[in-house]
Length: 322
Image (cartoon, rainbow, N blue to C red):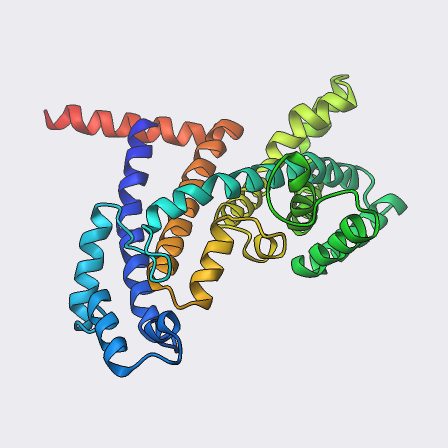
């Protein structure tokens, strides 16, 4: 298992390198001059040329790319054009807010979404199942920013129960978590339902019932673990997106996280900020995919057996060579 993890971590290096080259190249074609945004419309050509020289924007494309990759090897994303602060320190400062929001969202979606999906599968084609299916379809169709604004109008403006922006105590995360989780919750519930419907019709479930095992134990100890593989994929993808920063949600609720930081960089043509955020998101997704594969091994013994066989084959091959 350790060897497998090491291989996957090494495979992340070329992936992140390709992402870095792509995002650097694409930013060269983005309309708008960052220097003009920094200095304003009243800047003279001499001032513009001086700032471009200071930022290294006058150098040829391949020279800029090479310098960027050299800095990236030292985990240096450069400095923000607007604030002058290192992007790495800005990301580190904002990451805890995004992490807290992502963890709260994924816990909420899993704790609520999976039981809903299981109950829908057990009551398939009945009234309660149809009601939940309609509800999840409605939730999947609602834009996150629209739901966030509705929640602010209801709970902050009208009822004055919860804060509408900023960060502080736990109450500041209630509305962002609700607005950011509803869509993922609906997706997880629907995936759980469809996966459970396939599993509960399997022969081994009928065998377990015939042995007198309680219905609750059959569902939660036998059926659900085998139905979790597609659900885990959905959960990990959702968590990876949340770790990348819920851009719209963080902007609506003024949460100083990764998503809001990236949105600010895009609006201001702050290239180092955008590049740093995109590389960070790619890294977060890669880590989540690795964790997902490891969770598969613990949930499904068949996958774990594949790792064991692969390790034994490598050991035999090494022994034969020696």
